[in-house]
Image (cartoon, rainbow, N blue to C red):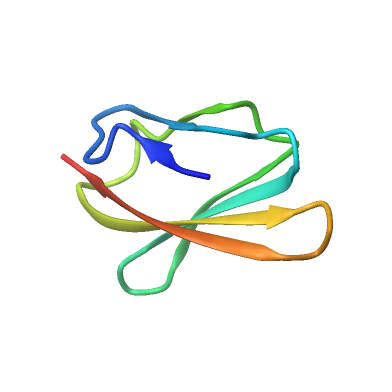
Length: 72
């Protein structure tokens, strides 16, 4: 599972969203800036600050996957 484009400017697309229950976006300091229940494959993050972010995917089977993404 991947997030693209990386670095991004307005939106990130998750390659396979079918098994994702929710998405949380954290900034580099660990602060949660967005939580999305029942996400679509495209996540709009145009209002978050530029820099490193962690996209945390909580899966329907209980596992968690973290993807690093950089906002331009």
